[in-house]
Length: 404
Image 1 (cartoon, rainbow, N blue to C red):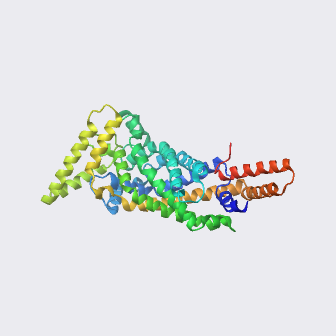
Image 2 (spheres, rainbow, N blue to C red):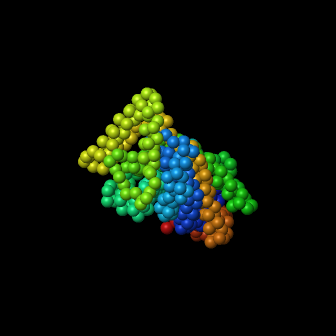
Image 3 (cartoon, helix red, strand yellow):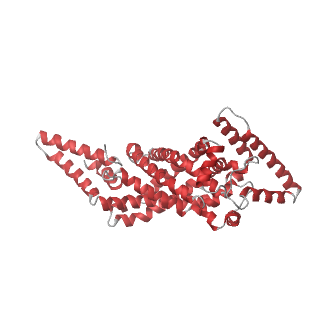
């Protein structure tokens, strides 16, 4: 039995059977709200940088938002993503814990791949819920529409239900590798810094909390950097109607000039400066015309139209364009991951301590006593009962969620 004790100790310390699903849901919801709301202004700046027709620096994007929408523009659409992140993150962390319990397994060469798969499974659940909210949020960030209700109503009438999930394939293609890298890297760092041993020691919650934030933050920054090109494409797909010449979405009354109008005016002024800039502008304009044609063409299905628009978008983007918003994305994803995963682990631990005090220690004690009883009992009936108890304890311990 001693050969299995380190594995059992790790399991009950980190993902014990006493943690019900609603604890994961509550902790995940808190994590989502903290992550999205606290980092929302930087997310707004990133959206403007990626959706703009011309290249904007971080400072220029901030000035553009403040000039066109004022300070309140930095938080425009925050209520939408705040409402969406609660069920989305509850689903994410619930799915993640379930996947870890099923395929997480022991420490070996394949564990990073299994953890990445757990992250991919959780991401699919998360994106199915959050994508419509994210589409509305990004359009509001660009200063369009009178508010969330006006945006949803206009999109439904002018573009149909499919517009809310237009970018879902690209979002999934971005978020699956992002979460996979984040989860695998975070799991590796937690083990490298012995975070779970700190959690099991004296004042374990307080001792381990800073390491939860540190490991997740470092992992999030790396994952955000390598998936920036996919994030750019996703943003442009979700907001592409804003820079099509034939599209005029309903704007808020007396709303300031749009980001597109400002960017176009700036581009026109710059294009008259030199012959080189004029040639570059002509090539870009031709690509934009192709994009406009793709968006306004007639197709047999929404997926065919999306494919043509996606191809046209990619043709307009240079390598430099694909990494637009890299700095704010890394600056965003680093603290976002730290806040999200750190808050999740902290709230989950506090819920376990407040609502189920001593449950974790009791689980370990029962497992040890049942094993000892199984080894020392001379009665066959007692031995069978003890073995069954030990087996049940082990199965329950290794699942991150309560057994049905």
